Length: 147
Image 1 (tube, rainbow, N blue to C red):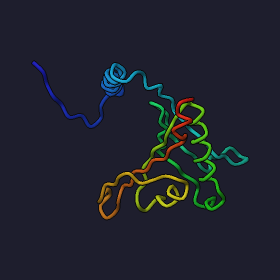
Image 2: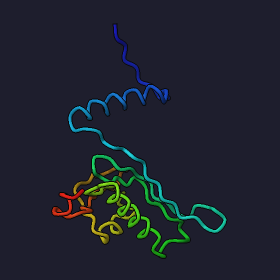
Image 3: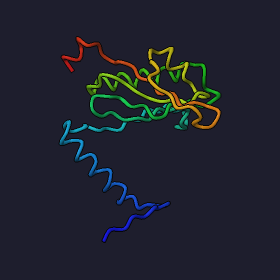
Image 4: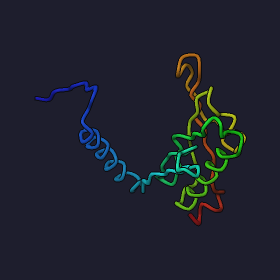
């Protein structure tokens, strides 16, 4: 007999088990994802983090999950530099495109100015705001042949 349970605090190994089974299935359909995490940090002279970008690469795509710059350091081009470095690293890893999302009160215009295009959105996530999904080609069609 099987039992189904809702767990507020699941064990990490149980989550990893489910995640790994899905990854194995996906690999049988489209090959390995070549997953690799990506972390880029801006540090001051004391080593304190003043900004950062977190993401990962898989299936020839760069996924940017978080871009953050300390409020007092904004307007100095750090976000632009973080994004450019991530895109450069993605290309080095064989990525053809990048994707990310931004809440409407965060920085969707920042990404639009840097060549990203909106491909979807969820209204009222959170209520009264939008979650905006964006993507950008990193290499042209001709360059894809070489990736």
